[in-house]
Length: 123
Image (tube, rainbow, N blue to C red; front, side):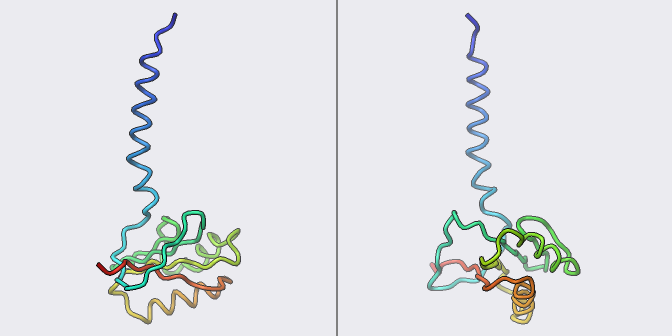
């Protein structure tokens, strides 16, 4: 009879690794978002296109880093298959209002009917 103990050990180690890594993957790009009193929780079932902008201006579309001159084309590419859903903008709290409006215009330009803005709940 073959010994299955090594196989079980490997399976348990893989399970632990996936349990540790999965929450980090779901969080996405770390952005210090502004706080708000009323924050609506997005459901996990809604697979939206996420545009994250860090305080230094670094931008990501669905975890993929993009440059400002390719933002519209990358966003349009990521939006394919998500037509009719809003684009989620996860912007740093110190971004100028003008920059957020520019991002919203780009989202509208690719056909997004709405934009959702991410905020942290006030403590």
